Image (cartoon, rainbow, N blue to C red):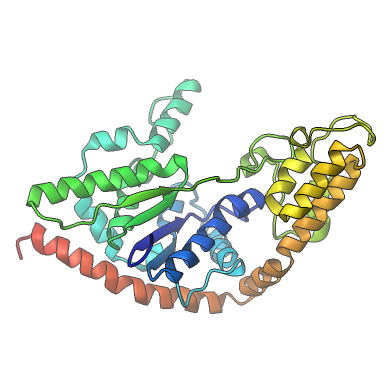
Amino acid sequence: MFEDKTVLTGVKPTGTPHIGNLVGAIRPAIELGNKVLDAGGRHFMFVADYHAINAEKDPVMLTQKIKEVACVYLAFGLDPNRSVFYRQSDVPEILEFTTILYAYTPKGFMNKAHAYKAFVDKNLAAQKPDDDGINMGLYTYPVLMAADILSFDTDVVPVGKDQVQHVEIARDIAGIINAHYNKELLKLPEYSLTKNAILVPGLDGRKMSKSYNNVVPIFADDAAIKKAVYTIKTDSRPLEEPKDPDSVLVYQIYQAVAAPEQVKAMAEGLQQGKLGYGHVKNMLLDAIINLVKEPREKYNYYMAHFNEVEGMLEAGRDKARPVARRTLDRLKNTVFGR
């Protein structure tokens, strides 16, 4: 499926990740990248730092978040010797590409973008002006995203449901340009929707999210992880009462981090009234600590030796720029009749 295909994934630096990020985005992205490379394809992964400045204006916090996201992916097995791993802001060709795309992108595309519409709806609900707090970076976010994708002649972009629109807009812009010049200047990308994506509930049963303050951090120390696990919402049913595993929040989280045989054992223990909430919380705690122990050591090493990570990102930049340059030159030569 991925033979001779180019697959691209961008990761926005949003802060220290949690279990939900790990099982829903980090591991699937790395596993897919390895699958692509094993099939003879090309895998590009970038830290989307230009996208991040739409929301994060503090340079100290921004730098910290960029470091964290780069180290997270390396800690969980991203191989920069196989994947092209780079920082978006290190590839200036992407910004040139964006400028050209602006001239061919209907404003209506931006008006219908999900992130923009959601911000407008939030303003209206708060009885504020429609565009209060909306900067042009957020408004034109889909064009920069299109440049990220089209610059590398990307075949496939793996996305969640909320990101499908970005790939569709990139495809539409490329189609407009190709039609105008009556030739295939830009490759039309496809999206790959993550199948069977794991949505991990948080400590209170809602979706695990930093905004809800209901997360299990993956790189905190064991004591902090234990504290989070022990605050997971439960009810008052006694140990001996048989329980439907799917009604137990601890079990729902356990499914995302434990081996199949471990999940089966917890389910049977709950159904037979042999496991209480204290037991299952301890089982979850052990599973999480075992899962993150080695990556946490790598993460801490990379954070303490970020100069090594900088070297990896610079090597990725040197691989990415010639690819983006070729695509940009092809576009510019046509646009300016060279």
